[in-house]
Image 1: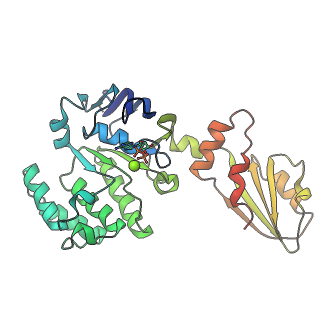
Image 2: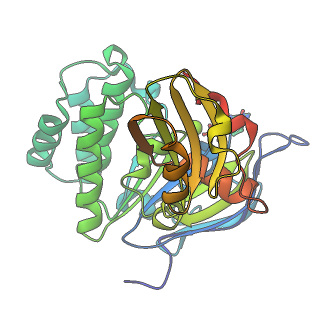
Image 3: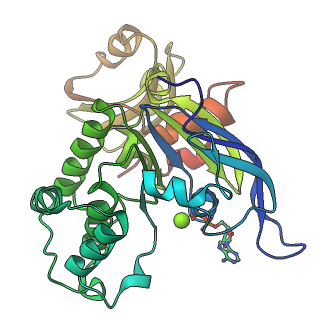
Amino acid sequence: MTTVPIIQTQALTKRYGKGAPPALDNLTLAVNQGEIFGYLGPNGAGKSTTIRILMDLIRSTSGSATVFGLDAQAAALDIRQRVGFMPGDMSLWSGYTGRELVSYFSKLRGGDYSARVRDLSNRLDLDLSKRVREYSTGNKRKLGLVLALMHEPELLILDEPTSGLDPLVQQTFNELMREQRAAGRTVFLSSHVLSEVQAICDRVAILRGGQLKAVETVEKLTHTDFRWVTVTFNAPVSPSLVAGVSGVDDATVNGNALRVRLSGDFDPLLRAASASYIVNIHVAEPTLEEIFLAYYDNSADRKPQPALNHNHAH
Ligand SMILES: Nc1ncnc2c1ncn2[C@@H]1O[C@H](COP(=O)(O)OP(=O)(O)O)[C@@H](O)[C@H]1O
Ligand SMILES: [Mg+2]
């Protein structure tokens, strides 16, 4: 373990054009060796902007960034050698086949990675004979992964690698990332869907409107003490059944089903609910998005916002 962060940004700011609002606003962030770090935020948050600065594809307006302790601008070529980078948009290469790109980047990197490429494309079920423009979004991501992983770099920087991957491929992706971590390598990946990366990330940062809103371990966030509990009865119920019950918030009813946000022990809820005949109980962990919103927007009173309740009744 090195004490120098693998990625470090200091007050990094980017404005696309004079007087434009910052696409990235004073970002200070450190990523440590050996972690899988999720960089999360909705579209337009500034994720790709950050990654392009790290890879020196664009320049920041102010602030600084280092990768491996090296300045992202001054040492851009050295950094490139040691990073596996997957851009968010691969349309630049649309005229080439997967195999042509593999051989181009292999020559550039000066190695023979054919065994690793074969292994990766088998595991990802990717046909390298097609041109990039013929690939689906998911297949472009797979090709991007092969190109990023083939030289076994010590750091992966992946811009929305999981978008458009079907669930089976997502599993393979997760395995590949865990293998990186097991080998002591570092992964920095962006996503706008928290649930897609929740299973593999050690820590996550949330970016909104160019500003860093939170950095937390996934473990800490998922140990927040609320769950969504749906109790199904044999007849229609009223939310009043659980009114005032300890730990119960935000009760909604859909026919015979009562859904509540439960904090703490189950006993008070079960005692109240058992006044009616219970057919089924379903317990769901909150999504990371719900946890984040509860954690940061509502830390004062721990109540979910109305906007979180849109998916209750269906
Ligand atoms: N080349 C560009 N020129 C002008 N504005 C841009 C450019 N690239 C991104 N932006 C703007 O910067 C903001 C952040 O974009 P981006 O970094 O692509 O976000 P994300 O990757 O999180 O979706 C958005 O408002 C976007 O419209
Ligand atoms: Mg992006």
